[in-house]
Length: 350
Image (cartoon, rainbow, N blue to C red; front, side, top):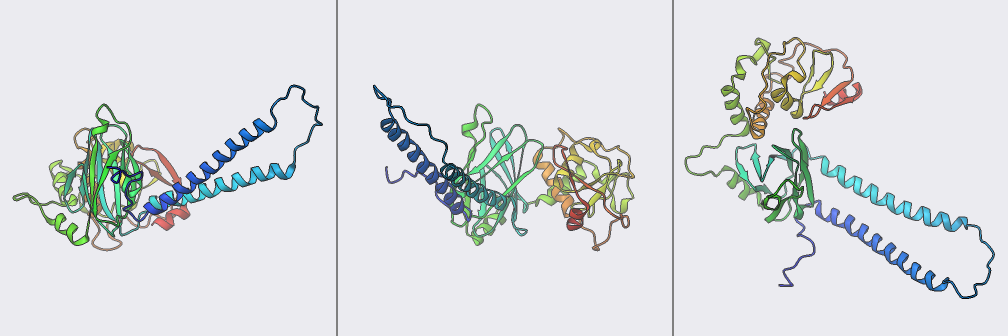
């Protein structure tokens, strides 16, 4: 029984060892200074305790060298912790460009997982080892937190916003998946498993389905939903409809009716589906109805996957000519918050 007890979860990702090293460094520094300060308190309490007839001692001015020492050394150690931790944080927020994309929607009290290839899971996540996996998260109700202790990764799933992180499993096995953000009365039951598999085994799992259940990719499911909602009646190829064409839209820079320019990323596409009147494309009327409450978050992800799959036949097709010099670019997240990027940054993106 004692042999099965683990103080720390198993290390099963490429980043886990780095996170553990930082943790043990911070723990060692904390223990060292705790013991040092506690020891000095005890020694000084005994050495300089008040006596019955204390002798008068001359006053002493501060020693500059000593004061600089106990200021500079803790500051340097704190900066080592900061730089080390910031580097790990940035690494976990910058997925490799070839990372496998997986989407997860938090809902009290479950995780709904979607793979681009069409497989769906509830409270389980299958991933291949040796392959970076980029997770895109959102929530249907309250804030949840996607936590895989064995991979040393955790990311909040926030309503109305897309958050991302990545990991790379390096050891096959089944690992715990938790919601680490209190989300209601049954928060403790919002648990699941992450199954790390050999690449060949993962491909076999990805292509296998229940008998009689055809597999639809997320883009195919989004195309079907796009037709069911009647979106094609307005969004036609060649900008011939009442709405702009969606071919080549994803990742492009579009001009709004107020003169601002927005990067058409997943957050912008989500806003355009659920809150179309928030920003109206230049040259078009704000006649698109809102689909808020009509489509679930996983269906929004499918629609976005379909729109992202619509690429022009030619590299420069589907446009409306040279837009000219770019002003400051307004980037909109899934909640409608804005951030401004300079024209130099836009040239790097476009």
